[in-house]
Image (cartoon, rainbow over all chains, first blue to last red; front, side, top):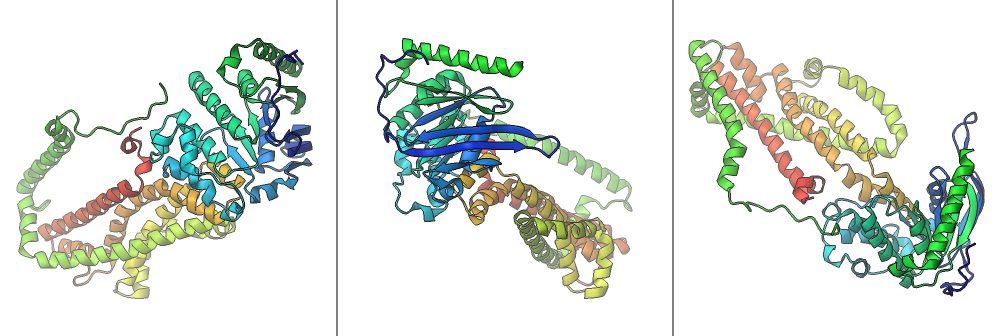
Length: 276
Length: 271
């Protein structure tokens, strides 16, 4: 760990409650003869209101891990629980908000209707939760002027923001984001990152965020989970003790740079080990 | 800034509306004029090959009631026969996409039926069901059924996987996934199927009438009867009306597509 103790870390919204618990999960694909182990003995706990990033070389199974937590894929061994319930139960309660790699908005619906979609789907699970007003949430994502527009009329960055708003609108327990900014150009990406950071800081939710970008992982996360490949496993979990609320100014701080250097060298070690 | 919204296309912004019309309609109009002139040249020199265009026009004008009655019969076959074929094709596609066992069970039979030439089935249907409208409905329906089925099925399966993932994490029911994702998403494919089915519907109706000719039995019978009597103007007038019917159906479809499927046309939406 780098020495960043001179910075005070902000208290998490829910100090010790466990949001997501991944214990000793194993996942493999393929037939009996050509079985490939994608995840091997992965254990990870995400506290309520904690922002955790998954980073690692391609093929380390970070997207697979996200899919397991989302209930889109089943583990071969081990277990995943969300708020103490199985993933299936959590999905029934609409506890999971997914932001896929592409915005995946429905082209025949306006932005407002796209963001309202999770409220109308599985309405039985709406009871007793704080649904947000889709209009309000779009306004806070800077899309107040685009409510009646269709996805094809918006830029990629705006579409991705609408997809994030869609994941927040029904007040899920955990947000799963699979490289949501990877299709954007660098300037746009930075802007969307800051937008997400701002929104999340005032709406603390557990987040599992898959990314390829070291600065992105640092600026957003409370902890960075560094994964190694062949087979996919957790190599190291790095605490990000930078104060919140954060903003762009943090990029220039020594603490940020120290941490970035540390994460990069750890990543390099993982990749070199994989090459041998 | 890359965040700006694409603006809607400007209409007539340049003010060259007339030039635009001439540019858009001029070339095809010219083609039609050239074909008409060539037609007349051939017809005047070879009266037993083609009737002149004015002879066709005179034939239409001299007995409009007869043509109208036959046109209505053919229209009825297309509307009822093709309508049923389209609905059945789509519904079977839905059943197949929701229940794979249905596809497994039924698809081979459908392929067998579809490779059988409709022209060959038609006389058998006439023997079975007589000279009434039923065999004509069946033939017209059969012709449109397959393109509708295949296209709809492809559309129902071609869902955005990432959007499907979002639905699944929300624990959407199969009905919700169908209503909000598969059904609207398959529409571009359904319309592609209709685009093939519409002209085929006219073909189906005409073929059915060839086999089951009779008095006032549609434009197809009119063609066979008039051709047998070497009456070229009536033959070609009937062909022209069949052609007109096809054009009408395709235009109606294009209009409908614009209303329902505007979201899949990028130039309309103004990206």
